[in-house]
Length: 314
Image 1 (cartoon, helix red, strand yellow):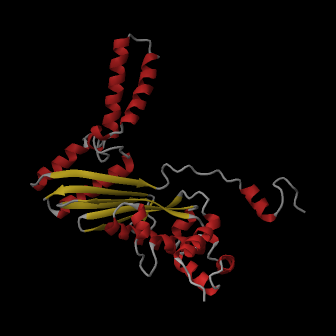
Image 2 (cartoon, rainbow, N blue to C red):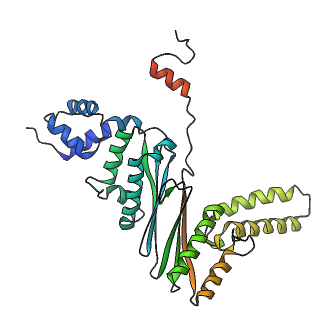
Image 3 (cartoon, helix red, strand yellow):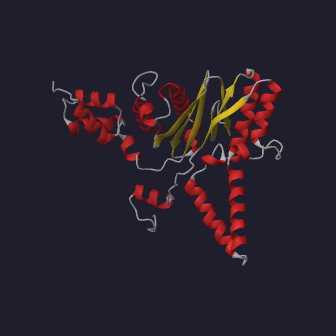
């Protein structure tokens, strides 16, 4: 029997997109011959993932998990929303969110983590692509933790427990009662899901974003025809408003639309008799920032049938 090397397994995996263990088995079954192993995997349906790897995956699910004073949120994408209803896919997202509590928010570390039942997260994902029939990807993950207090999660548009379209984590530090922290955290998470703040406070807003807003405000102010000193004040006012509306702590709380979030947190601590500090938050919205490809389904069907798009079908 030919020796199965790590290099040959790697090559076969890169060529087919199949899982590591499947590649090892294919090489073993075919005496180490590469082309025969490729054909073996194709025959078993395990090489299908490679053909799907180039297709845009912008649907899927966001999953959250909380354990003790640590919380995780992950995004796993698929090509269609239909897959989000698949039990196998949902179970994968749920398990990955749970694993992230241990591995942290690095996708590479999470991909290499041992998956329940055997193999790694990456290998399981590859197998899922082959069996479900759509391209999928573990896009991102984040973990928040506090030394004292609570990390609270919330899922908007949930399709199953802890799985949905928008996932939010809120990290609250302090010695206030657990009930107070959970209630406040849930309200803040719902606010974050709805208001989509860009940073915790104004100082943390991206400098390039501020400059872009300043340029836009400047152009608008110049069109007013007012003197330069007035234009400058108009721009400064526009930027101050943008910062206030974009930073979480200065946003008006969605529950009453009049109280700044910072005051809501302070009041909760006052009523609990112990200070509460909003340390951090994280909001994942499914597919944000992914450019979805426009698919010509007529052309795709025609190509599959071996005819030209505009050719009449007898």
